[in-house]
Amino acid sequence: MSIRPVKVDKKALTSFDQKLFNTDVEVSGVSINAAEIKSGDLFVALPGAKTHGMNFIDEAISNGAVAVLSDRKIDCSIPVFVDQTPRNLVGLISDWLYNKPFSKLMAVGITGTNGKTTTSNLVKQLWDLNKIDSGLIGTLGVEIGSEKIAGVRTTPEADELQALAAVMVERGSTHLAMEVSSIAIDQSRVSGAKYKVVAFSNLTQDHLDYHKSMDEYFNAKAKLFTSEYAQLAVVNIDDLYGKKLFEISKITKKSVSRNDKNADWHYSKIESISDGYKVEISDKNSQVISGNFPLIGEHNLDNLLLAIASVSICGLTNAQISNSLSKLKSVPGRLEIISGGQSFSAVVDYAHTPDAVSRVLKSARSFTSGRVIGVLGCGGDRDKSKRAPMGQALFSGSDLAIFTSDNPRSEKAEEILKEMTGGINLGEKGFVLTDRKDAINFAVKMAKSGDCILLMGKGHEGGQEINGVVTPFDDRVELLNSIRQAAKL
Image (cartoon, rainbow, N blue to C red; front, side, top):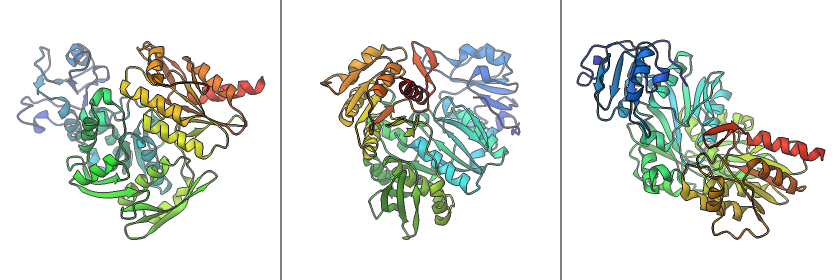
């Protein structure tokens, strides 16, 4: 991704930090990627997991870099500034250079293990439905007005993030909804960002290959709920970690809960209907938001509550929210219904943690009269500790459990599947099919009228990575094709 604002505060770097930048250099952009350097840019050469940015200095200079910031002295033809933690400065420099774009946006940052994508999309939809020009940054990419840009990661690097925010301001956006990952917080990608509201959904096992423990994972999330980043917090206190966060956060905070009547926003009525829920939500002043919420899955009730609290704080009235509820739409790859005229239900979901798998299987059970056929794999080169719990969640929550591959990357799919199924007596309800397409076809073959196939793990993703090669593979397309092919037989 490489998108820049047109207007830049083109000053000498000395005006940013006199001690660090002791040479007059005028810059017009910042990048940590040498390939994306443009004429006049500051190149930030960072240490990486496999190599150091200094190894790309020639490419950066060739592309027009006028200065370098790094953690070490580099012998080259342009000025070099040295700081022991240059990553911490990227966001601050970008924020300054692009005229502090977050200060001009009503920004909502959403974090948590599950629910970030849906909640951020609901926030943006509520703004859009009320004629508020807003931007979106997250797992599904970036939206600036009507323009959609593919994203590489949930939360962009700090230089990209500030540039995107500046472009949104230039194009007239006044609000921003974005996902904030724990890794992004830990790596200072949101350095320089200032949010009107930061929202917390939940914390369950994930990313322990990076954070090493749940405490470290929680502490990374908790950093966002400080005055460095936010004015106000919204926290789901039904979650145990949410309750802890609500207690320790020092900024102004509001609570949401499905059942706790003392929370600032809570449900006073939830009634299941054919395509979602009829809801009433009460705020602290006993004012009610009501309407039909057309998304399935109980976890989406939590996502809606968090979204409503966030947009309410940012200025939407209860009447505006109530009038918008029935117009909300589901997010691609999140309990997305696949219809090919079949007599059974077929649903694709992004669930890729033990808790998320359990939740979506429970949701599938609630609207299925027949059997729930679950299909799931675990990604390679990622948190191995969640594989067995994910496998157990699949087996426990499904009538037929089909274990398969999901982006094995550099690992052998067979080994990942052994970790998923270890300790499980598959019996007559468990099946292992290494090839994901074969697993989908098998699920379709097994499905009878009234059953539900729930295909989990990849959601909206359009590729399958095996041994460094990514081939096109979209669960939604593959499942629909399989259904149509079976109908012809």
